[in-house]
Amino acid sequence: MSTELKRHLDSLGYSHPPVDEEFRRFMYVERHRNGGALVLHAYQGELDEHMDTPDAHTRFARAFLQEAFREEPKGVATYVMAIVHEAAAYLPEFVGYLGERHGDLVVKSGHLLRKAEVQTTTAAEYAARVKDSYSHGTYRCGPLLQLSLVGQVAEESGRYFPEFLDLLERCPFLALTLPWGPLCSLGLAQRNVSDDGPILWVRPGEQMIPTGELGPTPKKKRNTGAAELQSLYGSRTNERRETLFEDRTHCHADHVVFGSKRETTAAVGVLKAVGFCEER
Image (tube, one colour):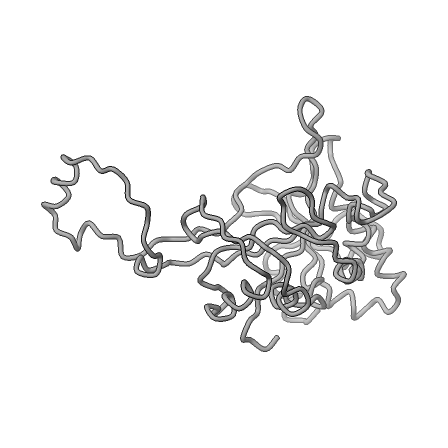
């Protein structure tokens, strides 16, 4: 970690958690200024500078995850989130990877604003659409819907991707927490029997969309009286020129099992930007 980043974290009031001295200096606790929630951070670049063996990385990952999932009192999580920055930097760009390696894979994509519309296409065609419309971190086509990486069941999209799962397992944090990992309670013997993922989806990014790019919308029956009142203000006032595509995950809880036995659990994910047409 650079001295500049260290100084920046200190200025934000980040502290270190109560863990063993060996790894304590590599973990940073942020207290949110509004609600006071705690977030645990680590930085892959700093870990690479000071840990030169796979065993050291694995031991740190165990210590980090143990702290990340700590509950005080039992049943009440200490941290709302734990982030390892740049831990996924070694992974390929997901959309391009699927388009090049698995171009014939059948995938489903949504519409930017009409959630009920679902289009079936191939990974290669979807990647081409993303590439054609990509600009500064966002793209102008519908999101890639849930894609299973451990096999296809019923109507869902997906395939068993052993080589991609091998890539994920190179990250010690993921190797420990994937559904067949040692920290998972499922105790799976094989990766392709998992009913709990991993899954992949891709989002276009939050953006304002000119209405002219949305295409025709299904006609709805309009209230005649309301239509006459609106016409008094003129067409330029009535027409919306652009629409916000809100692309964010709101506060929620993840659960395992169903019905009365449902339990709240922690979710593990990899967040990686789409990077078409940019050197990374």
